[in-house]
Length: 169
Ligand code: TQI
Ligand code: ZN
Ligand code: ZN
Image 1: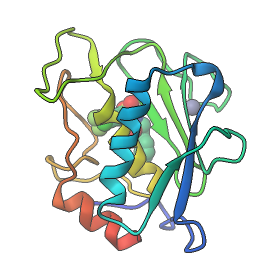
Image 2: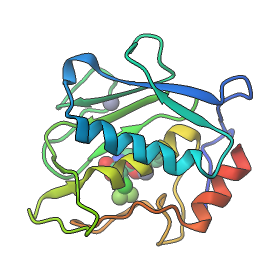
Image 3: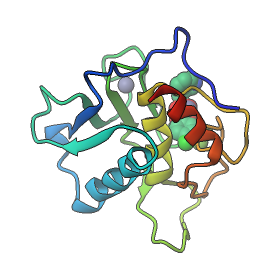
Image 4: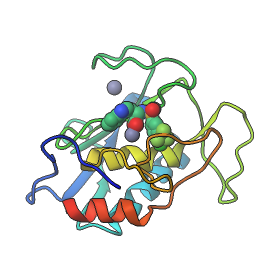
């Protein structure tokens, strides 16, 4: 079953149309931006929330960036594999990805060739769940389940994820 963070933090009713921006010096490909667009859409389809990309990193509600090693928030990344990404509970809006992973943007066939490859969309959908206030789920098919087998693509919300986010919004 889904869970929430202690105290059930959530985005307030006055902040449900959220903007997101990518760290300016990351210079991401259009493919990466499009993966995030799709990942945000999966959640906005089932909850009363909208997500709009903006160029203004300073004023965006949600700030997404790739970082390597120690990046100043006390949660250093660890090189390839291990920790892949982290996100903080509302209303922090910080979503950080480990720049040292072999991120892949999978085709719809879900095939991931490199042994150390990590599917970007799978991790993005999971971390956005945390950004919205979801903790981990005990249900294995849920996006918010705390482990994923390597080289797996899991991007579709399970009913459990939907129930959780709909309880919040
Ligand atoms: N990062 C952990 C995660 O996002 C960070 C974390 C551990 C965490 N405990 C937490 C975040 C409690 C919020 C609350 O779960 S991770 C997966 C999964 C990670 C793991 O790099 O280990 C995904 C990131 F579920 F597949 F194992 C994304 Cl999808
Ligand atoms: Zn961080
Ligand atoms: Zn998690």
